[in-house]
Amino acid sequence: QLRRATGCERVVDVGAGQGHLSRFLAFALGLRVTAVESDARLAALAERFDQELLQELAKPRALAHRGAPLCPHAPRHIPGRLDPAAPWGQFLLPPDPPGAGPAARNPLGGPGGSEDGHRVLVTGLHACGDLGPALLCHFARSPAVAAVALVGCCYMKLSNAPEQQQQPRWYPLSASVAALPGHQLSYRARETACHALEEYQARLRGGSAHLRAHCYRAVLESLIRAAEPGKRHLGLQPGRKAHTLSFTQYAQLGLPLAGLDPVRVPLDSGAVGAMLEQQHKVVAFCTLGQLLAPAVETLILLDRLLYLRERGFHCALVPLFNPRFSPRNLVLVAARTPLDTALAGLAKDTEDGHSSEDEDVEEAESTREGQN
Image (cartoon, rainbow, N blue to C red; front, top):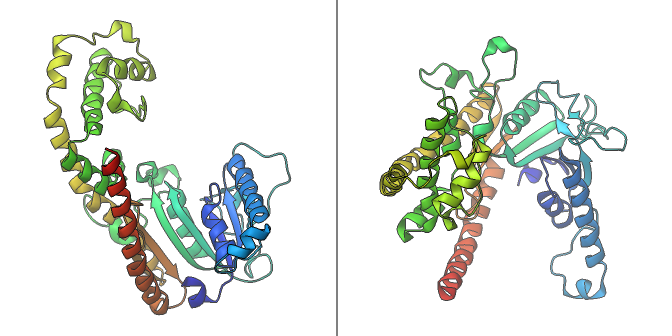
């Protein structure tokens, strides 16, 4: 829809990862795509996937069963990082880890537009932390970018450095939100806004064992503070399947991450047992945080939208994905020209997509119930 509204056939996909979105835009929609990814290993993996798809499309069987024709032009992958503080002309920093090849050229080209003088669309699907607002700032000061479509995530990684440190501050972006008393958001609030509310709701209704992990983490926090009071709210990740462990096993994994020896911490005391019996209270507390999560995410996204409107751009927030598939489902769309036609098309696509996605979700849930 943005392509039709702006007339652009070139896309710069920033934070492209393994290139799934870039691949779809290039092969299915026939757009000329440049994929920028900070991890050179992921960029190389994306190129490998492109070649595998090209080989598959070249097979006679694939040609015979192909529905809509696919464009055989793969995306161009560039390992590099967005420089959030530089003017738009200095778009890229070296990748991390650095690659062995020559430095990549700026995909936005010179002042006239992209490398061949045409304007581009910029996309960022689940742009993590500072990358999302940095993309919006580049759009705001780059005439080469006709429009941007952004889905943010990992809000807890946003920088909100004091202005005197001369560092970019990515929340708040807008003057409107910056002027609001009490607009500051703690790390905990921003982290809560990243949770999957629909998934959590399903766990509550089903009494899922996953809820046990909340109590485990709370008890571990108490043990860490008792041992070293200066250590608070450490970003510990003892494992993705914490709910399958006993608390002793969980603590033996988590305490070393906090620099503590599990042997010196009493894990089987009566006090630990009493805290574990308070799981229902911990879950209730976490649920209250989940109820506030949409309000926090809304504030962050409206701040970005207001930043763009304060600069005269046309923009909107569109719930493009089914949140049961992608919790971060709100797309911030902005352009230098009116978006009425594009938004009308997006609304229709969203309605059609949600109906088919609901059927897929119901089918998947029925399958899981049958397996259980």
